[in-house]
Image 1 (tube, one colour):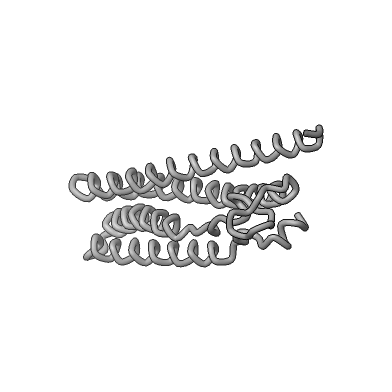
Image 2 (cartoon, rainbow, N blue to C red):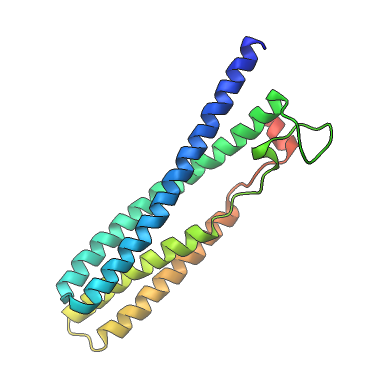
Length: 184
């Protein structure tokens, strides 16, 4: 094995480690974000004041948006790492299990990334925080049916966020073809 092969293998190992780390962070956030939002809605929906709902909702909404921006950036890094891993699989001459005599590998031949679940989870969390903010704010200024109007606003924000995140996912570069991998 040549020194060049050793460097390529080390690069491939580090690239796949980065992908593993990014995936681990994503799953932790996807478990934490909706749990926290759901708990806040449940607690403040029963016993919170208008100012409690507004303050906690605004804080949760801002934090969730911040985490979402971070998640979207990590998705870009992850997509780059996949393209890099695909190119390294080709340069290392990994063998395809799908096409006899062709190069391939887990990242070249695997399914493309799909973040529909991400859109639903963040849409639901943003809906919950928006509901608290709208309900608290509307109630604080004396609007009748503040809870119902807040619910409609929260639902609208959640649906719009989920639709936009799904749209962004569709526009994201998916797994490359072998020809595209060779150009990386």
